[in-house]
Image 1: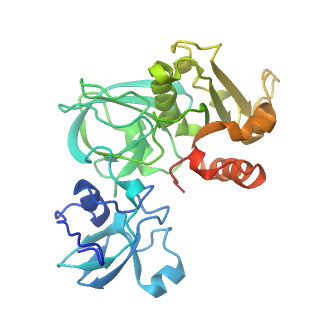
Image 2: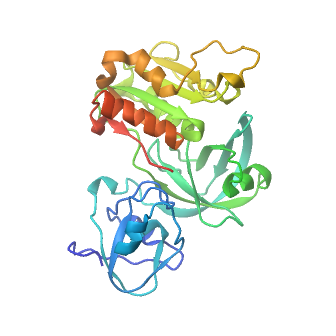
Length: 334
């Protein structure tokens, strides 16, 4: 039971407290779902809860002293009464479900990023910008990856995934899984999804595999009747030229080169020893600031990428230029 809410829910043996709540349609606060952001902190008032990852980085020493736990890393072992501040913005748009998924194809995108396409018997129902949790054989705990595809009745789920050094999840996907093999997909989750009811033009700011949800959002906006006259500015940053990608997805969209524009920059010019790069050099948030200038407050922003890039972009927008935080959408993954 959730204290002072009159709300209760059941948690299956293999589920976490957070995901069981979301499946029940309860607005349990969260962002990353994998123990890194801390948004799903709660307090146990009665009963016993087992932690699946006691050393999760989202819990500080102060949190431990106060007895706080993470909903995404907790599993009740008895009836419990918990204290958490519910957040109606976290109500699921679609009921999260776990389903079997078969790998259909793998495609190289860059030297360290690939597109993985899976197929399920159920329709692919999600909001562009959301993510799924992938349960991978032999990998402890699920991994969160965003779709680059669109919702569809055929049950197709496409993900852009970057190889992470010593990352167990990406190691399995890059080195072991083959077409025809099955995994479990659980979701959808995520709060940084495409808002259809806004009346502003869109800016997408991506780095690394943060490209995936923003490709999904840009595609949805490109085909949405209410956005057919609006601009979509897409910014993508990498360390060196070999990291830059994404324009091939955008070129397929109506209006590319006109109302849809792609802007890229590299931050480590030493990774271009032959001086072949002709674009901007610097961090991608600097490109956003330089191009949009005094119009920064006029846009709706979607941001996804490595934590330093996300933090720098938020600092530039919300603190330096006072962009209203209600117009900035992101999910935190640290």
